[in-house]
Amino acid sequence: MLISRYVLASLALIALAGCHRDHRRTVAVIPKGSSHLYWQSVHAGAAKAGKELNVDIVWDGPPGETDYAGQLQIIDAMINRHVDAIALAPIDRKAMVSGVDRAASQHIPVIIFDSAVDTGSYVSMVATDNYKAGQLGAERLAKILGGKGNVAMVKVQPGAASTEAREKGFEDVMAKEYPDIHIVDARFGMADVAKSLTVSENILTAHPDLDGIFASNESSTMGAVQALKSRHGEHVKLVGFDWSPALAADLKSGLIDSLVVQDPFKMGYLSVVTAIDKLNGKAVPKSQPLPARVVDRNNMNDPDVQAQINPDMKYLQ
Image (tube, rainbow, N blue to C red; front, side):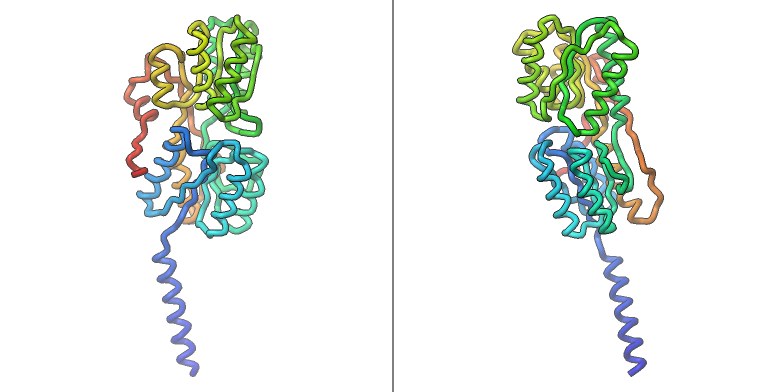
């Protein structure tokens, strides 16, 4: 009887080891939304990492970038599903704290990407240096305005850490370095093209002498450029943010002066790689900032710029 118990125990250990060897890891990647090309590029980068590392990627985000409750529900669903790791782009830095903390309490490592969250229970954050990116936008607009004039901001939404940092970087540069440039208006487009169009039109109506606009994400830039088209506002210089084929066409035509561009493909790729490194017991950095760059008509066709703004989307097939 004693021998049979040892045999049974040994067989159980062998079976358990086999299960661990056969387990295919799953990483849930939860963006703020899915409609913009930016998030599709993040998805492609995550999918590439998944294929290279033999990891299942579960991509699930809320339909809109203001749906805090929807994103929290997705986080809870992934925790209940017992995924191996979560990569999350928090819609709101405060509202997502409970979800991140709950995942950590269940020993599910969380990689934060794109935007910060007000808790330290995540493993690593992979994001654009957004404050610096906002500074780049300010420097560009100041340069093309000759260091003077009236400008406005089409912001994204309160509580979105990434865009708040960009907007703060823009404001700080203007306040400290360009006293003859005045920010005369700033309004939220709520991460929606139609709403960004409306607030941009209202800004142009309120300030007919406006010289420039800074828009701090893809939807705000799309709204601002549509307002300039409808108002024949070619004299207003627009520095926008992010990249899409439509924005590229407006950049080429001159309606947009320049775009501050991120690397969402790399962000998605590195988020998944970092999650797997953590699961494999490797040390990972708490912060992994990615640089932004200014793209204009002079450099938009450079090979390195093209590689960044037109990532390989075949990984989504």
